[in-house]
Image (cartoon, rainbow over all chains, first blue to last red; front, side):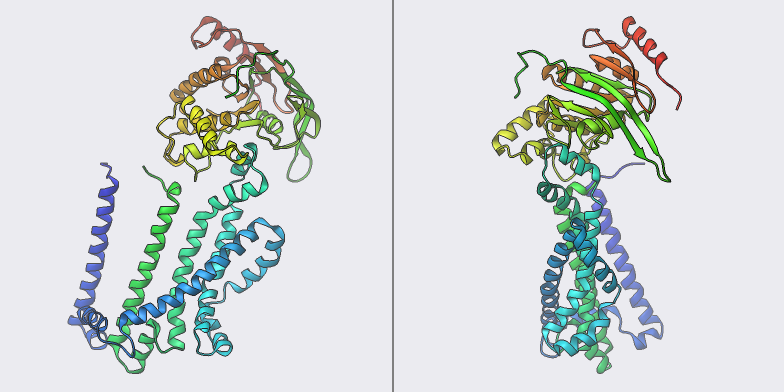
Length: 263
Length: 260
């Protein structure tokens, strides 16, 4: 079999990706035009046109850009705090047995609770404030990051620790020069999942209580039976969510080049 | 760089006396790896520990390195009893154990770096050893991009760069293909001749042992003991097909335990 250069492989990936999206949109268009599904669901051209229009004309009090930025700002703020504290707790939990004994059961207990289950509490505690959204996003990302980082510290190759000791590393040097770098890939996989979770839960939070944001677009669409607006909101969520994950992956590829195979 | 020893060569540079080591077995009892093991290593000697697989050779290295402490007996290196791992005792691992997030340069200079050697000096020193093992041009490569033989060269440079008094090599060429293995043996001999160190090299390959060693200790199965000792006087570089080489090879092969 002929092997392909990385450039060719990348080009192939893009071609297949575009082709797949094209086929999906074409199928969507055909179904809405050729069957009764078109009665209850808008076709892709209407949606794309509407998205273009809403970048200029506002929905409610803001344009689409405004709504997306509001949601993004909420996610970024709370996610950053959650990621930072998750990394700190995860690392200390993996390194100090006492911290592990105290925090691990608590985190394992709270982790399976879906962020949506916290919405009533967030409203009762913080009302319809920004804080109630930060609270939810924090919960949606903190546990994922903490557990992922923790398991990263736990799975450091003991032979590498041995090699470092043999070369003269002291305990604190082991921590900074061996434990932290070998945990970096785990940190990134945690951050990636957590960012996805955060984005998904901000939408949920905005659907319950807000007057702007991407989630709000969908829920007001439902209230006014505006299917086009609902689908517009859904497409925005998908595209922004995808972009966030792509940015995260790009960052990972840059910082973890050593972890990637190939020349 | 450490200068060639001009003073007297110490004969009892490393002394293992009455070393007994055992590991607990799951389900109770214990497995004796070594019992009353005794041997000494001369300074700057290339000593090969040769024995059947699983005979406890790695355990002996781990004890000299200080990763494990013997149940009984003592190991003294250069006048100091071994109680913990230390940079004066370097190790080249069978599985290389390179730090994958560091470049070749980063790996080689790791030892001097954690011991506080200034950047300019440790870079110079690391470059010297990278050149010595023949990896110039690969300073910025990550281990994942290197072949097995090149990785092991980095392992050797990393151990050398810390300027240990003894280097232990735990079947470093065990995972390499035959051709690379011959080449590595040849190059290791050259490296060691250029910069003499005390080396304790573990292998289960008789040809490799004969090619490299000043002296070979043939070990028995567990609990391991020294079964025989061979001073190898053949001139270097050695020839695998030299009749004297072949005669020794046959002789040693015949006394090794082949049973488990």
